Image 1 (cartoon, rainbow, N blue to C red):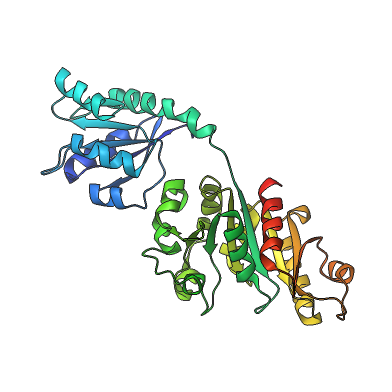
Image 2 (image 1 turned 30 degrees about the vertical axis):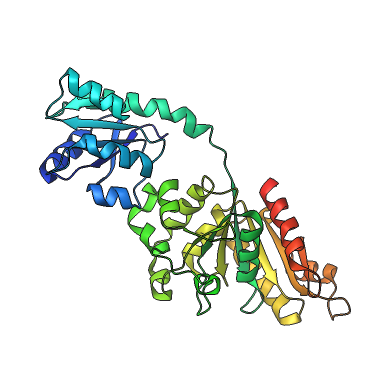
Length: 344
């Protein structure tokens, strides 16, 4: 949890919500956003330490506790309402709320209630297991970058974030029709949380999750600040999160590569692809990716070619992480690499 308690305000009465947002602007508190109940339930939502819900026209705050707890498991909820007698307080606690304050809210009372509710959940958040984030990029088109990222996501039953431009997107390859894409996370920016990442991810029968790429022009316009936030929060979503960068370019790809725990550069064993892989390795180095955090995957390898594996390593300047042999069973090879990346 940050130094200031981050609070998300949820309610259908615009005037009450506005007053609460203004009151939250106090030492020790920070408002991470304000949503109407329907938006809060459907997501994505800004990340927060506690949720403050208030009555709205035709929908009392008490009625919102259960559905919001289902949508945001583990997130503490505090109720703000005009009726705050002992009976209401008992009803709120029985429904699962961590506190109740009266309206109009006083800054001191609000600060104490929100800080107390958030403190109980802070220890659980800190002890949550953290996964690993791996960016996958290609030396050039046609080297099998997206296939590598997809197979690793399948092998690890992890999360795949499609950030590659092109006509053959991963959602189409998997036969998915996601309702949301990566672009739905843009409004949240740095306030993005793990639950928001999950809310835009589409589950697949193979056990993996996919965050689909938006249209190419939308991807080009996405702010670079999104990269670090989604890498950070993806670690709480899956044991292994794969980011398919395609042929990396732009600030968004650079930030993802820099924030990731590891970067894989995929190449085929031909001279042009290897030369492009060396350029990709140089691009990563200039962007601040440590040499120890990047390695090489040689795809479609077969013996007797023009280049040896040692020669490819020397030409690219990156250590070899895996060799995907052309005629061997592919799944066991990706299983081994996924396991190595998860426990590294």
